[in-house]
Length: 258
Ligand SMILES: [Fe+2]
Ligand SMILES: [Fe+2]
Image (cartoon, rainbow, N blue to C red; front, side, top):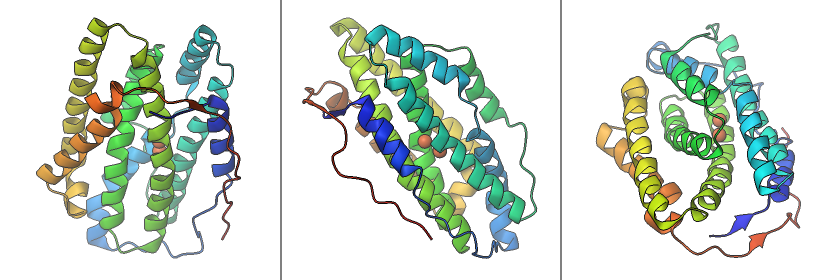
C-alpha cells in the first residue's frame, strides 16, 4: 500500500477546505414525500457531523508522540474541520427548509460514547472508517432520494471529501495493523470485520427508509458495505506490503469557486 505522509494530508485537507462546491443561491425545494423520506436521517447525520473532536485530537496527540509524527495531529485537526463543514452545510440546509437541527439521537449518542471513552487510535480509526464507509452509501442514497439540486450538491461535496477521508483512515489503520505480531493481526482482522458488519446492520435499521427512497434495498446496501470492508480492512488490504511513503504534494489542488 502507498502511504502518504502526515504533511501530505495536512496540505491536502488545507487546500480542500478552500474548495467551494455548493451554490447556495439554488432554491431549497423539497416536496412533501421527499421530506417524509429523508428528514429524520438528514437531521441525525447533521448532528453526527458536528462533533468538536476534542477526544479524537487528544488520542491523535498521544499516538503522534508515541510514533514521533508531529504533523499527524494537525492533519487530524483539519480532517475534523472538514467533518464540521459537513455538519454546518447540512444544518444550513435544514434552516433553509425550516426544520430543526436536533440535539439528540441514539445513534449519535452511541458513537459519541465510543469516542468519548476511547483514547486508543486504533479503535478510533476503526470506528471512523466504518462510519465513513456507511456515510458514502448514505449520502449517495440521499442524493438519489431527491430531485432538489441544493441537497444533491451538498451530498456531492461531502462524497468528494469522504473519498479522501477513507484513504486517510485506511492508511492509518494499515500502519497500526502492520506493527502487530501474527497472532494480534489474526485477532484484530476478525475484530475489525465484526465491528464493521455489526455497525452496518445498525445503520441500515436506523436509516432504511432513506436507503429505500434512494433505491437501495437491504441486499444491495449490504453488498456495498461488504465490498467497502474488503477495500478498507480486507485481508488483501491489511496484509499487503508497504510501498515507499509519499511525501508532500508537489502539485497544488485546484480551488473551485461558484
Ligand atoms: Fe462527513
Ligand atoms: Fe468523513
